[in-house]
Image (cartoon, rainbow over all chains, first blue to last red; front, top):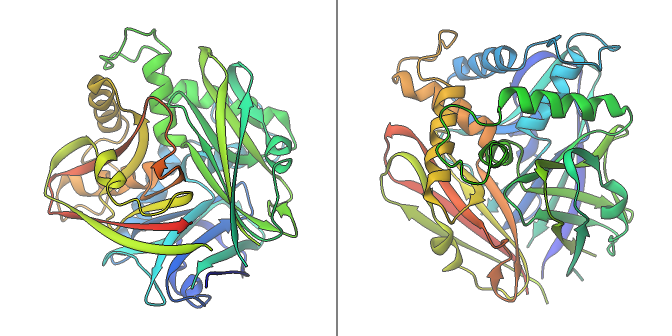
Length: 137
Length: 137
Length: 137
């Protein structure tokens, strides 16, 4: 018999950068098999899955994002909240707010090198809320 | 007892640009809690979640996409359908065709500033079809 | 009565490029209606949905990705595994590891021109594993 369960995680304020949150997500698992959806309720931060072993990957993801989508890009008109605001929204358009990951044997079915990234795009952000929905048995 | 429900929305033809469709999605909600998947059946338009309050964000998303992925990029070989065709496919690769959003208390569990964007990438498109699948109770 | 089913696909090693895998996914469908989640357990390859008819679109997606996210980008520090390693991770951040597609009448509810792409970002990769989770009836 399938069930649907919801819970939430609040991340304390973080500086701009890329952080691993795999452990925080795994601590909420309450089904044995099915899917787990992670939804970030913000438009200036993102969620992604990538290499969890070598922290230099997280450094490089941050550098490349900042280079491709520069703060204060000449074409932006939404500038009242600072040079890092519209670039943050644009990064979120590309990286995304939501992940759906399979659960197998009560664990996230990630590959050997995969981890869940939280990407804070603002220099000085408030806390961030993540909603977790599990559907399975 | 969980259930699975499907319905569809047809968006009338729109010019290239970024549009809010949150209300259209919400009008289809028929469960109290679970997840809602929104699937766009096209390869030259996209779905995303971002800032819904200030329309200048939608203008800037459009400008930045057009700058990063230019129409008629010199390397494109798929050019028979016009300069805005392959750039539209490429935008869709980056932005995506599908969103999965939690439902809580019979509503999309969006953050305060989040809305659902429909991004039309072609200059002169036909109508677009969105399929909605809800799983929950 | 809803059920949740899981299965996997192993893709043999492929050279860098964009491949259609729609048929491989469809061969695993075992429900009539609901959703199907496709999850790639790797950080140097991606999944996307795009134009399936004209193979020139797949060629152009590959060219544009390589141009936008160059191998050996000057800012990368994660370089031990070769010039195509960190660029591969970055492409995966943008394109993504997971797709959720509706199932209608026992088939992927794709639009007329949509197909499922597997994007191999490494020059010489090993085999790749995809996990499929179906929830529906």
